[in-house]
Amino acid sequence: MATDFDSQSQVRFTSSSILERTVGKPAREWTVSDLERAFVALDLRQIGLMHVGGDGTLKTLDFAPHDHEHFETILRHGERADGSSLFPGTGIVAGASDIVLKPRLDTAFVDPFSSEGALAVMCGHFTRTGEPLPQSGNTIVHAAAARISAACGLELCALGEVEYFLGQNNYAPIEDTAEERGYHATAPFVFGHDMRRRALSLLSEMGVHVKYAHSEVGLAAARDESGMSWEQHEVELALEPLTRAADNVMLTHWVLRNLAREHNLHLSFDPVVKRGHAGSGMHFHFGLRKKGSFLSVRTDKGEFRPESAALIAGLLRHGAALMAFGNRKPSSFVRLYQGKESPTSITWGSFNRKALVRLPITTRDDKGRSVSPETIEFRLPDGSAYPHLLLAGVAQVMGEALNWPDRDNLVADLSADKAVAGKAATLPISPAEVALALDHARGILEAGGVFPEAMVEADLRRLRIPEIS
Image 1 (spheres, one colour):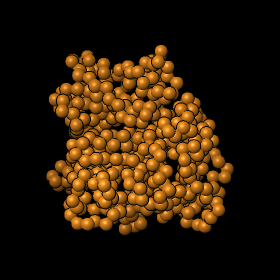
Image 2: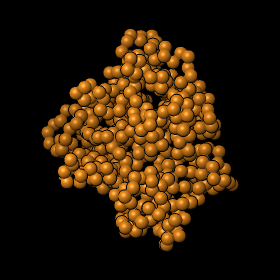
Image 3: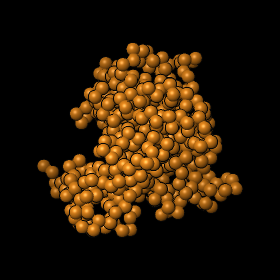
Image 4: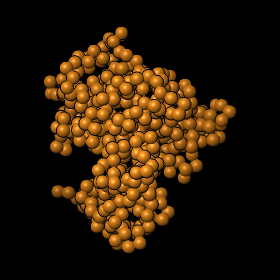
């Protein structure tokens, strides 16, 4: 029989966000009326329609609703915006550029940084005729997720490991800490511990589920004329469906940027902030879910599930093309080729952290059963990634690989746990090489109308002229 303490704890832990506690329902059940009641109960004043533009950054359109009808109109129908400004170079012409931002009610949260009290809602993009806007990252990842679910009968979920650097001028460390020895360091030996814990609390209150967070290895003391000390941290998110997983990465970046400004710290998601030191990746883990439960990567006989093999094979064969969405800065190539636990060869492994794809261990109970979902880790992307397009690309190449006759042989041949000398290709070393890989894989990305041709063409132009990257 549960004690009063047990009962109270259960309520506390299952109601994760402010809005869920206020509304009294899980987010998936929210209605406009529910959010209006919460808006009044929490004494909020404004609404922010948040969305991700064509440049892969978060945008906001703000409102101060003046009555019930205005509030309902905003959340039920959204508002128009200029698509040619939000998605330049993707085929939206200025003469017919109106699009509609339409709120996704289950993504609503109370903006923790608004001095006015604001309800924020993530939005999708729609055309003037009410169809999902093809150029929108939200549209693309949603379509890719639906397509892979239809192909294999499973839901592909993902989580991002959000690594970042915090910088402080003229920082006097508690002791002369050796560089690149910051893994799991705690305060007072790192100055960003309190900010990281604050980020976890805010993300939870917003409904963004986090697995854990910690200090990372990339400590770079102030030993040059800049006087800047850098330390590295990581927030690892929880497995969610692809669309939500992509949003969660964007919101985590947003929270960290706001907190860094409040703490008067420099923040960078750049792949490398100092040559020769560990860079920041943004590894993505993938899990397969069926009827609400995550499946193991392998069957009881120790063989890969067909879907697991397809995901691994797709990433091995077309990971280089996905760099167009996951490694978008010149320093992305510096991170990969300076040899700090970053992949350079196209292999997979159960243990090797320099492999492109890794199968991390999971914690187990006393009977040897996994107590957390088994995942397949893609170690190539970094903090410059556009997560919506990257995750959509992963789903597309996985779907293609489901039908490859050489899929299992490909996986067997490219195991980093075996001798693969002479078989494993290396990753691109320049944007131009990424463009070649993207051009080769574009038919897979465009299959089912998921990636618009004009968008792929725009990425090819960007990669072929690296000066504008």
